[in-house]
Image (spheres, rainbow, N blue to C red):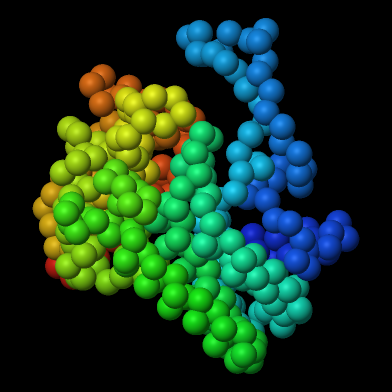
Length: 325
């Protein structure tokens, strides 16, 4: 069973869930997350009677972020739907109306909200900002929605959403770039760097050989990488200054360095990170910079998905040389 089959099954499940539960999703309010059985209320609670692992309190259930405004998630979903359609065009006929309704609803939501502040990919609780990466994924949403519209012969929608994509990109290039730092920054008008901006090339917002992207990768490496591991960002958040690395971000750096031509450093960082996995090769969400202890959610799905993605990227060089990964 290949990855494309998995994408197809998951999206078919997604559209079926809406139909089977008779949920009206035409222009309905969309949350950034739902419970595993479709719950909409994920109110966060602290379980004070539990000590937590090694006294790590508070122990919580639920997730307060369910009510947050995160404009990035819509771009991710529309990107996946676009990939689904590009691979399984013949297999989507039965779901055409469901797919188009979802796409139109998501795109209209981005039309209305892309210019507003949000909580960003890292779910900041104490602040809303014009996060650069949120805007990038709003661009992704409009860019992919326009492509999907053309697939469904909706040319008027495609023109409208392409116009939005052009406007969003122009704003990002103007306000998300800090010429003094020579880098895209975490939020408009700030000087903080953010590892999420390394994904700009992955989503096609900018070419990997564009001087602005190359400079961003190098600057991010210099400022956020410590002993071969990456911070998400170094500015204070709701819990103070970050103290541990975020595993997925190190893999993002590996892929970015490889794509801008620094392949030796990319491979060194990759091998170093693999050496920090446990005895069966599993990785956690965070890693302590000093002790290299695995911290946070374990095992973490994002860490392993990004490991696979980085490995595929690094394999391009070996395939070229006729070697095995």
